[in-house]
Image 1 (cartoon, rainbow, N blue to C red):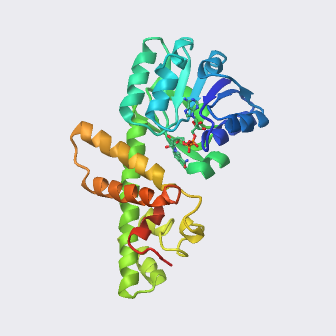
Image 2: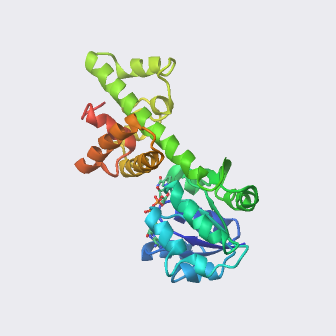
Image 3: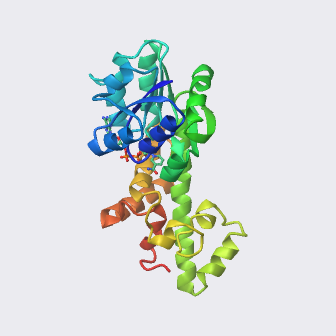
Length: 296
Ligand code: NAD
C-alpha cells in the first residue's frame, strides 16, 4: 500500500513506524522538522506538504491535534482532497468533534473519496506497541477498506456506526472517565482525611460497588495500582490537557444536541484549574491534588 501519513507527533510517529515495519510505503508530512527526521530514520519518505504526500498515496491517515488542523489538512487551500483520486481512502485518527469529520466526509463523497473517523484509545504506549483500539465511524464498505490498515497499528477495531460515530464513542467514554477519576480521587482523599489506610480503602472499593478502571488500574493515590502514574509523580500518563480537551469536545457536542452534562461541566472546570496551576502535562489522576495536595 502507498500511505500518506500526516501528523507525526507523539502518537502518529509510532503509528507510522508500525506501518513501515509492516513493509508499507509511507509518505509523511508534519510541521515539525524533528518529527520528520525521526520518520525518515525509520524508512519513511519525507514530503514537503500534505498534498505532496497525498499525491503519492491511495490511503491518507491523519493524526493531528484538533479539528482546525484536520479541517485545514483536508479542506484547506492546500488540502489533500484537492489532489486525491476517486476511490482513495482517508482515515482520521485524531480526537475531534463529530461534526467536523461529517463535513469532511460529505465533501469527499462528492469526489468519490471514502472517509472514516477512527479515534484511538491506548495512548502513546499502545501506539508504540501496535496495540491501539480504533473506534471507527464508517459505512460498511469504508470500514472493510480501513480495517486491514488499522490492524497494522492496533489490536482492536470497533465499528461504531456511520461517520462521526467513532468520535461520539471516544468523547463519551472520556467524559465518563474524567468523571469517574474525579469521583475516585474525592473518595480516596476523604477516606485518608478521616483516617482509614488508603490501601485498605482501595481494597474495599475494588471489591465493592465503587470499583471502576480509575479505582483499580489507575488509582490516583500513590502506590495502590501497580505501574500507575500516581507512583511516579503523575508523569508519563494521559495528560490533564488532553482530558480537558476531550471534556470540552463532549460538552460542545452536548450543547449542540441540547443535552445536559451536569457532572461533565463541573469536572471540566476542575481540569481547567489543574492546567492553570501548571499541571497540564501531569497524568489526569493528579486530579487528587485538588483534594489532597500531598497524597501519599
Ligand atoms: P502531538 O501534538 O504530539 O502531535 C500532533 C502532530 O501534528 C505534531 O507533530 C504537529 O507538528 C503536527 N501538526 C499540527 N498541525 C499540522 C499540519 N497542519 N500539518 C501537518 N502536521 C501538523 O499530538 P498526539 O499526542 O500525537 O495526539 C494526536 C491526536 O491523538 C490528538 O487529537 C489527541 O487528542 C489524540 N490522542 C492522543 C493520545 C495521547 O496519549 N497522546 C491518546 C489518544 C488520542
